[in-house]
Length: 245
Ligand SMILES: NC(=O)c1ccc[n+]([C@@H]2O[C@H](COP(=O)([O-])OP(=O)(O)OC[C@H]3O[C@@H](n4cnc5c(N)ncnc54)[C@H](OP(=O)(O)O)[C@@H]3O)[C@@H](O)[C@H]2O)c1
Image 1 (spheres, rainbow, N blue to C red):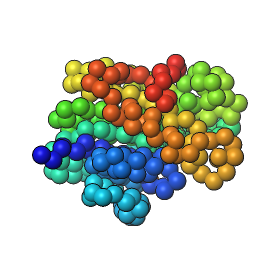
Image 2: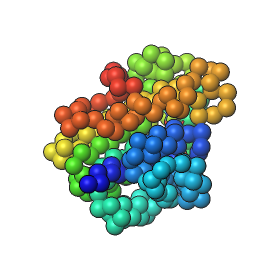
Image 3: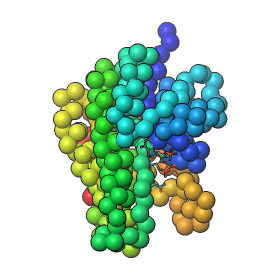
Image 4: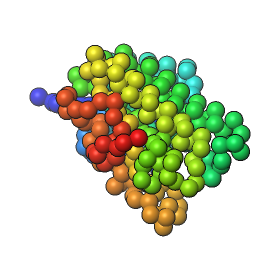
């Protein structure tokens, strides 16, 4: 009998160098059914062609997580094609304001960071909730950052000299949202965790600054996406280890 495939939605798979694409490749190789999404359908389609699998389990769709209509469309697509969603990986994010002091920030940057990293992720979870409820082992992974913690030894906001102001605050809020949603969805047996992928080389020159490869960062994400039913929820992890924040 053919085994039921795990249906995974990954947001923010718009760049070949990005974590989302590395993750999609790794999950497709493990025989997950992967829906890769990007703001541009063309980008998602081009990237999906670069994932070679022996199965046809890679699907490309457009998704802008800041747009209600776009999120509604992808939930309708998943509902009609699969009838459920097993794993949601909220990877889309950005708006890194490097070295900007809080009183020097323009609020547009801050708003954009929150629109994507917090409200966008929140919106996607909200729309996917009915589909996740139909899964036997539903999991949500919110890709956060060490910059969203106070004490992370490298990027914590009380530690890191670069002050990733709006970005850090939006990821801090995402960690808080993870706790709240995890508590709400406990009754539905949906495990929701935040995850720091570490410092990952997603742009040229980052390896020279000590970043690790995308391939090395994805195992921890897959771990959180495939937790056992009695696994943790509402926590913040890096490579399977609990992070204080
Ligand atoms: N790289 C690191 O060291 C690191 C460390 C900690 C956390 N993270 C987190 O890891 C995640 C992936 O980052 P990355 O480093 O792989 O960078 P990335 O390649 O820039 O990935 C972010 C992706 O999010 C997409 N995106 C932005 N706004 C979106 C929206 N409104 N709707 C849908 N997609 C949207 C971008 O799409 P476009 O291609 O269309 O711009 C981009 O493809 C992010 O959440 C980031 O904050 C990264």
